[in-house]
Length: 294
Ligand SMILES: NC(=O)c1ccc[n+]([C@@H]2O[C@H](COP(=O)([O-])OP(=O)(O)OC[C@H]3O[C@@H](n4cnc5c(N)ncnc54)[C@H](OP(=O)(O)O)[C@@H]3O)[C@@H](O)[C@H]2O)c1
Image: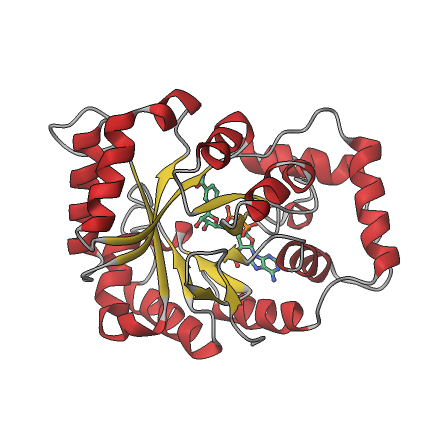
């Protein structure tokens, strides 16, 4: 895979394609298969893994299957909620969320700890920000960040309190590219593009039930993209991974063959200028004030 990219001013180096481990937490998945996927990812050079407290067994599985290869990858997780005995979005919840993640992930330090899509007010809570700073000083995390979109994302960038952000960047979610992404890049933040395939809406002949996927599906249809000779996944991944300002895009997948293909597609480089212009024009023509999907 392409040489590692500088993750903003954080000092971390990341691959252009990372693994979103959101779906790897499903209890129904074969555990040995998840282990093969996680190890296969590192073998392919997909050396950034993104997870969260709310992703079922994801953190625990990453710890168990990749704990012995911890030095080989950049590890991101998300906190802020769901800790027994602590109210959500409090300093105590963030502090204990980090400690519990360290244990589950079987690591001494988490490279990137993101506040997971909280509202903008939470990002002004000095107690929470101090809890992140303390955890960094204690060596429990390297970089604190925010994962989300819209007004809270803008607040996180402007606050100057975070070293990185994770936000939606894909064919159907281009809003951030004109605002948050350049703002974050100008401030030296590392930028992760989530949902780079827009959840692959082209795979569904009829409107899916899942609300986020349904939104992407409607946008996809409204945009009527007709990529000249390019498969939709190629169009999507070359767009997201090479979008100006984006350092790494994280594909969510449970299939190693999809990750292998993702690596190949990203290696083909940015889309040709004419295709890129058509993709931008299609978004602008169909855009109905579409905000980034959280
Ligand atoms: N608020 C937040 O913080 C937030 C929100 C959303 C996502 N995220 C993060 O971003 C990651 C990625 O987002 P996502 O998983 O929602 O969306 P995504 O990466 O845009 O799409 C994932 C879907 O694409 C399919 N896929 C993967 N490669 C493909 C290919 N080459 N061709 C066709 N389909 C393909 C996957 O199915 P298969 O399993 O069949 O490959 C999966 O259903 C998540 O795992 C998570 O880590 C964070």
